[in-house]
View 1 (cartoon, rainbow, N blue to C red):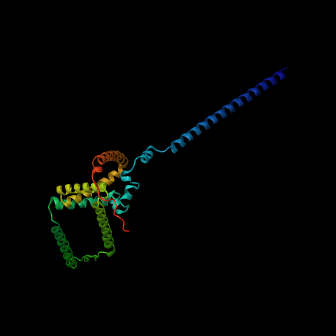
View 2: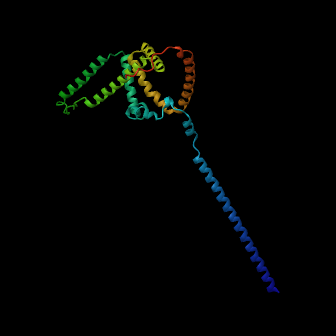
View 3: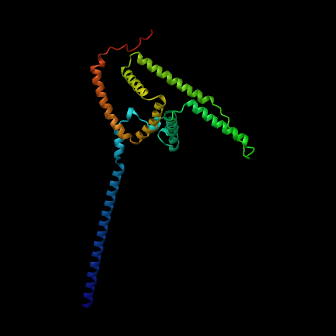
Length: 268
C-alpha cells in the first residue's frame, strides 16, 4: 500500500511539472510574438517616416522660382570665380574685393582724390623705392629686387573684345526691335529702366553708381540664396498682382493706342 501511494505521489508530481512546462512555453511564445509584432510596427513606422518626404522639399517644389529660374543661383552667375566672389564662397577674396572698392570710393568721393593724381603718386613711390633699392643693394649686402616683365596676353584681350562686341550688337538689335514698334511691353520696360537710371544719375555720379552696383552684387545674391524660398513665395504673389493690374491697364489704355506694323513684309 505504501509503495502504491508513493507511485501516485510521483505521478502527480510529474503531471504538475509537465503542466508548468507547458505554461512557461506558452508564455514564452506569446512574449516572442508580442516582441516581433512591436518590432514590425516600429519598422513600419520607421519606413513611414523615412519614406514620407520632408515638408521643406514639398514646399520647395510648390514655390516657383523668381523669373522662372530653374538653376541654382551659383549657376546663374556663371558658376566660376565671379560667382564665388558674389556669393562669398571664398570670404577672403570677396571681402578684399569689396574693401578695395570701398577704399577707391572713399579716396575719390570722400577725400576727393583725382585718378590721374593717384596714378602719378603711386608710380612715383614705386619707381623711387625700386630705384633706391637697386642702387643701395651693394651697400647693404642685399640682393637686387626682382622686377618681373609684364606683358598683356593677346588671347584674353581678344576674347573680352569679342564678347563685348557681341553684347553691344545684341543691345543694338533689341533697340531696333523696340523702335520698330513691335513689342509694347519691352518698350515700356526699357523706358522705365532708362528713366530709373536717369534718376540715379542725377542723384550721384558714375563712380558712386558703380560702387552701389558693386555693393548690391555682393549683398543681394547671397541674401537671396539664403532666403530664396521666402523671397520666391513673396515675389510670386507680387508678380501675380502686377499681372492683374497690367491686364486692367492694357484693356483700358494700351489696347486703344494705335501700333505700327507687326511684321515686315517678306521679300518675294
